[in-house]
Image (cartoon, rainbow, N blue to C red):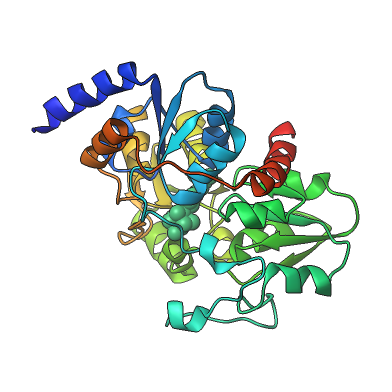
Length: 325
Ligand code: 13P
Ligand code: SF4
């Protein structure tokens, strides 16, 4: 089947099954173009919780589809590529410790700053009893179920500020936690997890890109290291970058996030120029989903994402608290 026929088939199946396709901003261009809604993690969670349909085809990675299943238990949530995972989300477990050095050979440990990933969320909670836990949406349902509230890159500061007390635990992204620390008076206790796509960027990459494009504004995702965020003109989520680029009088931008975002940036701003901060900012898991996988997912309704009810209810409370903000 050629691409055009495949798209027609998908549209037909969508009508037949009362399905909606949600795609993250990092998905392949053709998958984004096909989707009913494209957005950042926060927008997609909101859409999943309010949209009228029977089936949600979630083009993203597993924790995102899981969040949709948590928020919409009466809908069938389908993840087209079951192997599409987020390595950062797997860097924290509730009870079973990870062998991080084996999983990430180049792993750069900073035990003086962060709680080591070889431990568990339970260890961290025992070490800091009573301190509220904020879990980034890039976590498993089980971790969310053991958290007080969730956050995304778009609302982490607001979430931290909303909590009582002067100490807050932020898991699993050390960079997002450091960004929150820079923007709050509260003490952040951070886990040593990271996104391998954003964490590889260093300050010298940012300075080099700024030197090569002197008129361009640097937008950076808070999953980047603080040394990068400190030299950025704007730090925000993927959809925050779309808004910033649209509303800014600037004409050129350096994009400090996964390259999938370039598609919408260019499409929505044909008069502006976008440069990648690094050409290797590609998330292999986000690229696993293709038109073919969306077609098969709809046709066979697979793989359906299910979350055990006791975990789902507790994880939903953490997500609902975030959405209520
Ligand atoms: P946002 O789209 O929410 O900024 O998230 C980025 C991300 O890495 C999701 O995996
Ligand atoms: Fe996870 Fe990073 Fe990929 Fe987002 S870009 S899904 S945080 S590995």
